[in-house]
Image (cartoon, rainbow, N blue to C red):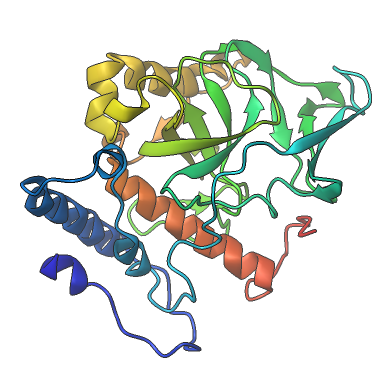
Length: 314
């Protein structure tokens, strides 16, 4: 814990934001997570802590001048309402979100973090379906719609085998170059591949445990793919890091990598690439990625970073 504490920088409450961390800093934080876990392993813990331990101070270390550690950390909400417009499937179909009777944005108004350490996952594409649904980041209230190509609804060439969607209040900044991979963000929220057993409803908000992340490079842009498991999945208590995925879902990580590598090839496009030696990084690295992209989002939403891509911030 002393190693972790050394990474946290004291700050006055209204200090200006520093530059975001280098890969070396993120790696140091990941190392501190591991050291702390080893030290604490010998001490008895409550069951909930064993299932999903977290260290908010490690995330503060990524951006020490933030005004909150786990930003918008609230109790997991049972359900958000949905308001469907248009026929499905059609160019006009939209899923709008509601909190009670109030219309909300799934990108801007659903919190990223829950008080129990989980993150909220917005399910855009239920597992074993192929309609390419997405949060429309350029439309007011950012509803879910089906992607289009040349004016036609877009489908994947085959079913996606996992629930797929995004993390609210995150953004992959197209003006930020990753220091190691030398690629920019893809201008979207962070994607999530949820590996649990249940098919999730399109537009549902599901608390998940992030456990790994792939650095996919799509058309020269960085497109993080967070691997997560729903907190209510029967195997969730046993899956706490990337190594647990291989243990309880043998071969699943490679299936995910190959699926995302190859899904464009039936249309004659080249395979997608992966950075970081094609490796699915561990939970500590994953949480650092989530925190960094949450910081990029905060800058965008506050106006500190110019909205030069026509995104809807309502």
